[in-house]
Amino acid sequence: MNRAFAKILAAAAFAGLVLFAAAPASAQKLVTSVSTHRVLVNSSFTGAELVVFGTIEDAANAQIGKYDVVVTVRGPTRSYITRQKGRVVGLWVNTSSREFTRVPSYLAVLSNRPIRELGEPDFLRRNRIGLTNHVFAQQIGSDVADVTPNDPFRAAFLRVREAEGAYISDPSGVTFVTPRLFRATVQILGTALTGDYEVETLLISNGTVLAKQQTAFEVVKTGFEAFVAVESRRHALYYGITVAILAIVAGFIASLLFRR
Amino acid sequence: MPIYLPIADLPINIFLILGLGAAVGFISGMFGVGGGFLMTPLLILIGIPPAIAVSTVPTHMAASSFSGTLSYWQKKLVDQSLAFILLGGSLVGTWLGVWFFSVLRRMGQLDLFIAIAYIVLLSGVGAMLSFESIRAIIRSWRGTPPVLRRPGTHAWFHGLPLKLRFRQSRIYVSAIPVVVIGLAIGFLGAILGVGGGFLLVPALIYLLRVPTTVAVASSMFITLMTMLLATVLQAAQNHTVDAVLGLTLMVGGVIGAQFGSRAGQAIRAEQLRFLLGLLILGVAARVASDLIHAPVELFSIIPVERLR
View 1 (spheres, each protein chain N blue to C red):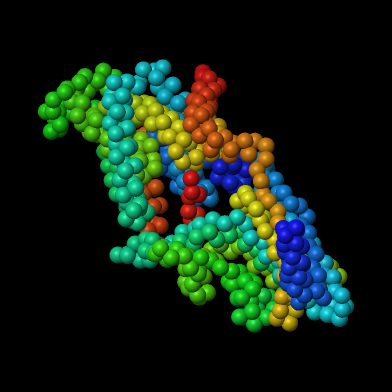
View 2: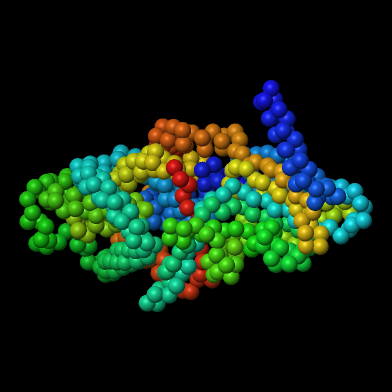
């Protein structure tokens, strides 16, 4: 009796919480979808292109055309060491380094116009909108923390990752097909890590986030590629011996073929 | 035509890898060196992660040195007793090298040490090979017979005990300098991530006065054994051997090595040494230019190895 009552109370509280949380965005609803939820990595994989679709359901019908959309795609996290070269007695050597811990291996920020036009710097930073406003935790001594955006290592990390194509900032990546329907094309590199990629879509207007939608896709290896990747870890010693035997066989076949 | 490498996690042009394998295989077969000192930097240059490159190159070197070794073995050019003693020393040296490697890494100056060690070793060995072979070429051009053996020139280590007779090499020398050479090769090989053949061949020729062809053949046999071991150890320890990359390199490599070892046997020994010297000097110059010229991008990013 008592437990049933507690359950009802909890359910009521949860419903109230949901209603309360949804209240500010109740006027606008955002529905998004990704063209595929599984990107398959096979022997001819050289990258992939995904399309994120979304519609804005506007109850008031008043603000059509005044919305901005930002689509952020984050790949699996990984740690990176960034090294700086300096001149020491005439030679260019690595003089200092920083470790960025558990940052996205892939990060794409797509929007319908430049990020800085979407709101105040403080608003953008708080909502982590745009590449530079993302958190890039650094290992500083025994601490892990993010530093100021103009830190040379942080700036260099973003610059090099962007040059590699692993980080993307595209101010025209989101296009409105109709005032309510938009699409964004996400380019995945051939070097993409396997794992889960989360897609976050923000609906922004006049410096406020009106709605937020999250979806995801995964990058997985299939067929022979998956087999090799799994076996190299599961049966590491046998895998190594197999490769060594293959090397001998390759050498033997070659000497048979080329025997005069 | 792109092919996806399952361990390196990236697509790459298959013909680029085949061509690279063939080119390095040719050099490997011609000079009896593993070719690691060329292949590892080349793979890193085309975008293969260093850890994958260092541990996959041995598979390619094993394949190309196997077909080469087979052809030398049939011609009875491999000095087996010399090779096994060198191998013993080199295994201990490799173990010491791996230990020293981790000490340097803790000190944070591994890259600089590797670059400087490369430059000193490569330019030293390259210059020695080139100058000596030029003198030999000039001698034969003048018509004076090449001095294969210098009677009476006894180095200090000829006085050491434990003397052994190595038949194929036609030398009578103490086992101690042979083990020491093996140790040094294994040690440097582990630190520089190379097989060490480019150091072993000159060491055998100039220090122990082993005939060039026997030195090349025995060195290739040692390369085969150490590279097979390296493949298995790297796969078991680090999971960084990419079978697809290795096999593609091998196919190119074994074909290249066949042509290379024919070319090597057709060319006069001193000319062979001169070419090897030039090649080694070229690689040294390449490494040195990286240290001297200001880089375009001062920052570089490498992923931290996944926790295992």
